[in-house]
Image (spheres, helix red, strand yellow):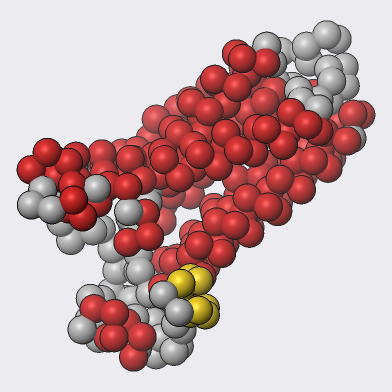
Amino acid sequence: MTFPEFDPVLISIGPLAIRWYALAYVAGILLGWRYAASLIKREALWLPNRPPVTSPQLDDLVLWVTLGIILGGRFGYALFYDPSMFAQIFTGNSWGERLEIFQIWTGGMAFHGGLIGVALAIVIYARAQKISLLSLGDLVAPVAPIGLFFGRIANFINGELWGRETTVPWAVRFCNDAIRATYGYCPAGEAPRHPSQLYEAALEGLLLFVLLSWVIWKMKGLARPGLITGLFLLGYGLSRALLETVREPDYFMPDFPLGLTMGMMLSIPMIFVGAWLVWRARGSQPAGA
């Protein structure tokens, strides 16, 4: 299957380019905000507790989470995948090189970095507002798959983060005129590859959202602090580790032992922490019962 003639830029207005990837972030944040708002309005879902935030507090939290996503995602990419960005702050030959780490429009965001950024934002906000940390995490966790879904679809449109070479019938050749115009060639080559971005959109995004929603709405999962957060960490960690087997590692990454990839190694702690939170939540009575 030949990669469709997607253009990463939706529309250009003079020097301003509106990209699908940026719109994916906007859509994920706005839709996630609305979904979280619907959860705090259904107080019965949280009984015998109460929703961790009010509507005005949720509005403030969205700003904190957005900063965590952007700053954490960019600094996480630099830390895990391209540490030279930090060195360039001091050794760059121009201000453009020195400030590359802040140039998020050039690409390079890491989910695990964004996760750390959001976690720090939640911890700081929970302590400042004297809110239950686990309950606040349970509010944020079920909206994350929405952003993941749109983000992976945007990765596919951009023709980036492709999969390994394969002969499956739905394999895609990630090469079109837009990619050639951007890079001068096709980085993925002409070989058919797994559309791993779509696999991730389905597992980390759609399926994980459905699972968490089912636990929330049918099993009253929000009544057990930490359960939804744990399920998200466990579900994402397992999905990412599995899909790393068909996703092409970044060419500049070293060969890790046992065939591991950076994505796998970053996901393993998520699996253990998520499993512990699920065990802790399911093995105890809802707070206040």
